[in-house]
Image (cartoon, rainbow, N blue to C red; front, top):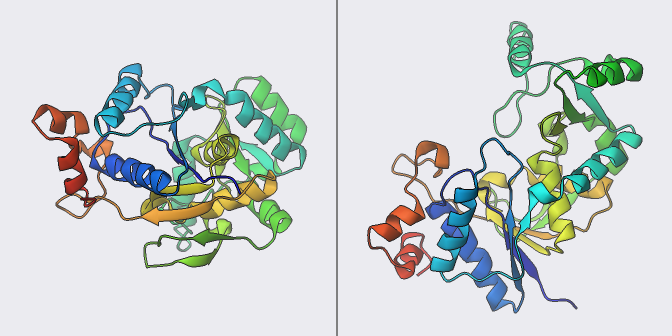
Length: 290
C-alpha cells in the first residue's frame, strides 16, 4: 500500500495569512504523522492577479513556518495543455458548451427572471446560469469563437450528472453543519459551472481535480468553505476517470466579525506578523495548533 500524499495549494495573488498557515500546517503535520508526502502547488491560473513577488513570499513564509515540501512546486500556468485536453475530452462527449453573455448581461437575465420568482443560487450564493446558449447550434458557436468573441465554456450539468449517476465522497473532517462520513454529492446545485474561458483555459474546479490526479494526491485537506464544491470535483473525477482522494475539511480562521480571513479584506499577512516579532511557534498558537 502506497504512502499518503497531501498538498497545499495557495494562489500567488496576495500574501499568505493565518488561514493559509492553518491549512498548510495541518497538511504538513498530517503528512509527517502518516509517514506520507507533502507537496506544494502554486495555483496561478489568473495571470492578471498573480505576481512573482507573491509566489516568492509563499516559499519564504512556508520555510519560516518550518514546512518542507517534496520536489519543485507544481505551477498551474505550466500545465495549461492538461486542462485544455480535459475540456476537449468533455466537449467530444457533448458535455461542454460555450456561452457568450457578459457578466453584466447574465446579471440582467437573472434580474429579469427574478421579477417572476426566486431564481436558484448555488451553495456560495451566486445565481445559476440563466441563459439559453445551449440552443445555439455548433456551427454558430464555432463562428463566434473564431470571430474572437469572449466566451465561457460551461459544463452541461444535466447531461453530466445523467452520465455519472449517483456520487459520494468519504469525509473525515466535517462540513458547515457537521456533515461527516459518506456524503452524497449533489453537483446539480451548482448549475452549469464554468470550466474555462477565452482568456483562461481552466477554472479552479477543473484544475484542482486534474492537478490532484497528476500529483497523486490521496488526501485533500482544505478549509470548510470548499466543502460543497467537492460535489463538482467528484463529478469531474467521474467524467474524466480520475482517482478519488479522501477529503477532510477543517475549521476556518475567522476575524473579529466572524468572517473568513481573506486577502481581499486585508487580513494581516504572515510576513507582517513575522516582521513584528512573531515566531513560527506563535503562529501555531494563534491558529490553535499548539
